[in-house]
Length: 231
Ligand code: HEM
Image 1: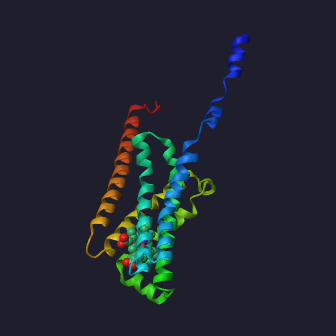
Image 2: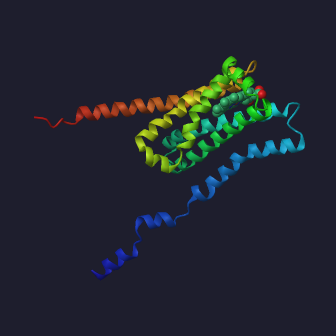
Image 3: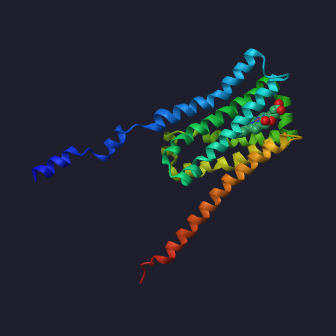
């Protein structure tokens, strides 16, 4: 009895063990990814300082920021499939950071267009929005991303409730589709890059669709298998 008590007392509670284990995501993966996400910005700053952004540095800046906004958005959408494929749940802890980086690059991209390219010429900007379909699509994508960035904190998850929050955050799918369209419509000659990104998005959305259909099939099968309980 004494031995049994001693053994129980020596076994640390499960949660304590988990807390004491080295947190590789929090201490290594997250800071490394954070630094990596800042590299394109650092490279642009370096380019401005050393005049190495080519003949049109404003265009290069807007394009680089737009490219990273879209690529990071797609990377954010790849997190859930990565967890489902590998079973590594730690990857989910990177999703919010990736999403916020995607949004930050989108904000800088839009700022580069409004400030550096148009120098706050609101009439010309509005004419662009109305006349150029790729700008219209870009603006729509940006407006859809805005509420997602605002409500990305745990406080907002609590305030809205998980089901509403989850439904709201499904806006990321049309936002990504519009961003891909924005890119596709902008490019005049070489559509290879937008096509690759469009294919990546189709794959990511297709994966989710198949997973959702499977889940629904399973729920229906279980509902049929479970007796209703009514006499
Ligand atoms: C108000 C919203 C937006 C405006 C006004 C806008 C404006 C522009 C402009 C003017 C360009 C062409 C740059 C140039 O050739 O000088 C461009 C390209 C691009 N934008 Fe946007 N954009 C917006 C939103 C977005 C968003 C939300 C994303 C992604 C999440 C995005 C991704 C891109 C990409 C990938 C390119 C092509 C870059 C390249 O050619 O490599 N844009 N955008």
